Image (cartoon, rainbow, N blue to C red; front, top):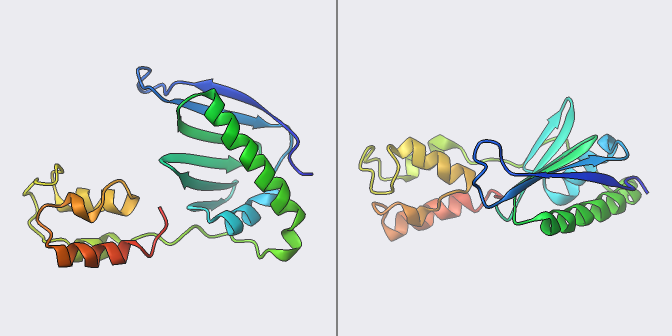
Length: 173
């Protein structure tokens, strides 16, 4: 067993204490740096950092970052939700560590959409603002992050929206 325990610290985001969500930092009792590339390979990390090692996951609107000595999770409903996610991560980390000899570690993040490829698929009426964004570039950035979808651009024809969706479907959000 690699990971045996942690101590949690729950807080409201400092930038806006009125947020209804909480953030969690779990300070780990053991260093899990060695399992991170295996977790990345098995769970499909969104971003992988080599030095210091860390892997980022996006899950149901949350950003989860595993470092060697801590796990951070944002946008949680409450402490109970944090505990469920941490227990799941602990089980996954320990299981993957036990099976590491069967897994090819990954030191790369998931492929990400190219902004220029997204812009090529938009109508190009930069500044129409019908989507609620000031420019197509801002809208394309939100599409690349998974925060918006093709249906959020009223200027896109159904055919162009489907083409854009097919392009975006290649990437995990």
